[in-house]
Length: 495
Ligand SMILES: Nc1ncnc2c1ncn2[C@@H]1O[C@H](COP(=O)(O)OP(=O)(O)OP(=O)(O)O)[C@@H](O)[C@H]1O
Ligand SMILES: [Mg+2]
Image (cartoon, rainbow, N blue to C red):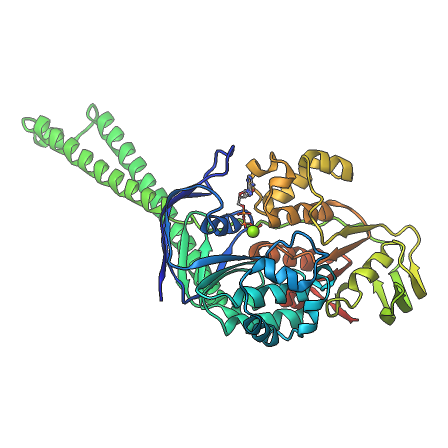
């Protein structure tokens, strides 16, 4: 066992006014299987880059292990996978890599193929195998689940649970639960480390939030009660002041002592007023300590135009073949108004091809594709890498209402300051939120989303699940997050 000590860490990107980290300190054990959670743009990837020594920072980070980062960027995907392995780990030992590959269900045949021809799932598994073959090495695994199908996720989750000594960023609840024993969370106002899996952390957070909300209500009531008492006291002393000149039994009974009596009364009410003020201030101060970590998760809206017929799309006996064997065969299903269809299938089973076909792109197919007359589709692509430029230009080019679009982004926890930035400087999840926010603002007849939850933080996943359940738009989606599918789909189409 050894420790990673982070002490008084402060960091901001060049040219940015806001610190991503400000004087934070915590300790991590290199024996942990550490899940790393926090909303998009909080600094998870940045923190890993700081561990790797990529940027300068204030404070100190000490550790006696070496760090490796996943995903490794293979500069030239046309090289053989074996050469990519060597680039990743120059003194790799073949037997170690082979042993890890075997555990991940990857045959060594893949090593002799050009790296770029490996499916996303195969690339992920190969990289993990190489990184875990290193010794005295602590792995920084940044979102390995994107593009992995459900079986792939289950397998990688099981694999990771047999390992230790890593930090894993993932927004997939079931995946995290399968393989971590501690959680590092970047909250709204602090950073915490706790023992347990994701669900344990989540339950604790929900409990803490509920407790603070109840406390907050109690203190609010107390503060207004104290205000009321202070007001009443003030009204009484005013009334007493006025009554000096009317019939006053005290004045009649004790004319000589009246002045000193009046003085004592004034001192008493002053002391009482002071005590009330003190209690009020204490309550206000206590209240200000609460609710700091309550995350924003406002209700979203989705705009959709009803179609003129119940049936929107129908596929009958569709086979897609790019020239070297069918990608998928004899697929039949229909999309009817109000359906929320999860299109499922292993990596490479043709989900994106089916989606493109429905969207009207040119795909070589046989069979029948029927699309309702004038059907308008709002499509969310898997890929966000093309996003650059200003959000306002993006809204204008997309023909959507800019203020509505920005309001939806704000509800998805994208800070106002980020909206001024060029889109290329947004975090991975923030970019994906740009595409989703545009789509929910587009009043089309059908929404088609290809892996919409990749990179999206858990709370926003829940926001999106909620809006889909509430507004019941017609939607076809491909998504490997098990919890999301269970919460949203009304129908499953398996390829
Ligand atoms: N190169 C950069 N220049 C300026 N700002 C950046 C840069 N990279 C990231 N940021 C900003 O730093 C913050 C943290 O980004 P980071 O990518 O570390 O977040 P993250 O927690 O990994 O988010 P996600 O869950 O979306 O991957 C974000 O506000 C982002 O806009
Ligand atoms: Mg990130």
